[in-house]
Image (tube, rainbow, N blue to C red; front, side, top):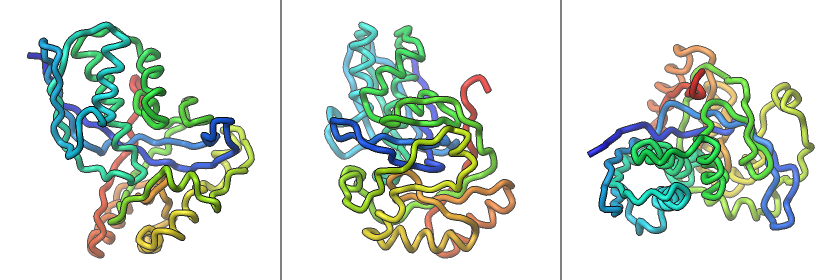
Length: 272
């Protein structure tokens, strides 16, 4: 039986701007993703009977993005195999770290290989874009500019260094925040070079901190160790450090305050 055990990584948004809306109501984004070497663990075992099992969740398998990814892959490839999939979840839901999207992307990549489905990276990117806005970035990997709905991806320079990430004890619902009347939706469209030279900002930060005091307190506590930023639509927050020693000091300081946190490095893009 063919098996694999892999990391399903998380991401942070270095910055996030909304520059307008499409006719269907979806927002136009400009963001910079960094994929980190930290996340959930996933185990896969191929089944020849076409059946699926999914362990690690307390809701129906058919509602899970991993299962939807597997079904989309089977439909696109014509494969009839199944799989037993187990997920060791450590990333929070609603944390702005892309845990569920990373799980779906990891399932696409691993099952494509284990099933010998033969789909190209471009094929997987096409499937992943239909699953969710954050899924393609985990297929692409590395540091990536996201534009449009977040699925128009292009290579970005890696920030390098070390990240200290902390998650508040609350779940922040993305869908509600996109509807918030005080969300800034008219940011100017800028080139990649202009975005990299400007101070990094996240339009969701003031919206989230007004509604979720836990996130506001987390940012305040983290700011003792450097410029703290919120990832995505929240509520996880992070610090970037150029060197490992200062990152470790931040991590120890946050943990001494009882704040759950972890340290991670950027994952390189495949082939780098």
